[in-house]
Amino acid sequence: MCGRYYIEIDEAEIRDIVIEAEKRAREANEQLKLKTSGEIFPTDIVPVQTGIGDYQPMKWGFPGFKGRPVINARSETVLEKPMFRAHMLARRCLIPASGYYEWKKEGSKKIKYKFYLSDEPLFFAGLWHELESPADKNERIVAADEANNARDIELMQTHTEEISAQDFLISKGTEEISAQDFCFPARQARRNASARTERYVIERDDEANNAGKQKDQPIKVFCILTTTSPPSILPIHDRMPVIIPSSRIEEWLTVNSNAMNESVKELIYRPVI
Image (cartoon, rainbow, N blue to C red):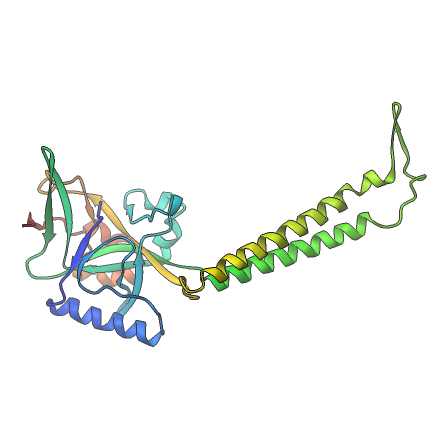
């Protein structure tokens, strides 16, 4: 897997990428705290490449179960997973890094190792997408509820027309059912509309209370693809990030995913002291 990586801006190529990402964030007026150096953790917002010369700030981790971010996707099965398939086909990206970290268990201790290339940065293969902003989500909920309410109003009108109980009196054994009982769909429709209205009011109030904590804008997120480690790295960990060769960057971003079949696997590694 890949759960930590690092950025060193003293590398010229990484420094240029950071400058472009910061510029993009300012132009878009994105109020995001962009992390551009040091150790990178899941949920950090970092520079991500989505096209040739196009770098954007993104948050590390797709939304996952019970709030835990999904930070990695297995390259071998990515097209089989509904969470990743569409993004693999249309929203591939690269995550620039100086290297990444992995841990090896030795007895009761865990030894931290860094993996890198001696003369160039790493470009992890990744997938990205854009989450709804709170405002967009709110508008979608309101639109759906308005459509459902309109349908239920029509249902109420259909079932609450003046009906003569005498015309619809039904005898079932010794029990008698009046026309009032036929109005159950109308009563249910009223309850549905009332429940939706109450839910929307509660959600709107919750969002208002959190207005100072959450920005009213879409958030872009990414995850990193992983692959099997070569024999040289297996003693440390059996998985590693997919690293796209610099000669295949354009193909990965704009053509297809074949470039990951030639990912860089032979890296330098040493313990972090």
